[in-house]
Length: 482
Ligand SMILES: [Fe+2]
Ligand SMILES: [Fe+2]
Image (cartoon, rainbow, N blue to C red; front, side, top):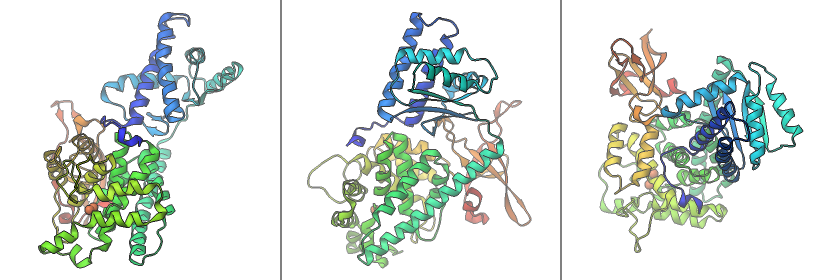
């Protein structure tokens, strides 16, 4: 079980690999201007670069770096550039742009001499020649090097990107609502004892994984929007989304992420056997009712075990259903007769479940906790209820002010959080879309970055003063965010 071994390193795997590659590759490229290819320094730098390339090719199948505007993509996932690497990335970006080279791919393991051929070819290119990539291609062909490909730098107009991201949003929205529909279907089929549509569920979770790997902001935003209707269905989908996004950041391989999504989607399946009156009861539960509520992990596990169609997936699904209320220190339920460690999937789903259950209003919880408070509780309970290292990653992912939070700024402006900063030091300085009031309703204004400084005062231009309840202002967050 490879995901058991996955270490929590607080970093997004594509970002770590992509950054490391660019560090080593640009060092080698720079050195070609100073030394000839027989020099020992070139030898050493090429060796360092080669080791990394070949180990990535072995584990990921290939290594593909692409520049899109001023972003770098590693195997189609955007690299989140760390502040301390920013200057280096910028310099490398300029070098590539000057030569009109937009991507480099290593499709199989490469030899040292071939890598040297590539970097000397690149560094010898003339500036501003659009067909440079063709020249490199020909040269590589001529030398029988088929493990390396290069491509032309594409230029994007602002409109292209706009359309792209709008499409991405529509796509994510579609995935979200289809998933809700699917959970409903599954619940119905359990009630009517019909067979489940497993293949459909698997496919949807694969689509969700792809959407989250491209850009997790829309799906996380959708999960964060409070919706009073259909809590149960929303909850299942949200837990799946939080779990996938969290798993991705922890470095769980892509093929296991959709299984994690499935386990998240069906973690509360046992609740389909609890009478609605108990599930939705607003008053205090009697001891019998409590014990019924607490039986849902076990009931869910039984339901999953009875379904032959899940195949090898059922072990994963059981981890979600059985372990999500167990707690990290095993003081939760169901009570175990033999102590054992909670699986990685169980630990992830427990965090996603806890956060989503508290952040959204339920019938008996009309005033949801604000997320700062929940994250506070999670930090406090970390090591007891939750795996402390996963909690850290989760808090970084959600931010103190999650996507869609309505905030008041010190400038007396109101805004909605639209983007969390990648740098965890700036977790309280997200990007915010300002709202202004006109013609009887709130309208979208410009997006401002709260990390922007005022040159004159040497202080931040805007700072969040407090969070506001969108219902009080009649603001439908979903309308602004999607
Ligand atoms: Fe539960
Ligand atoms: Fe739950």
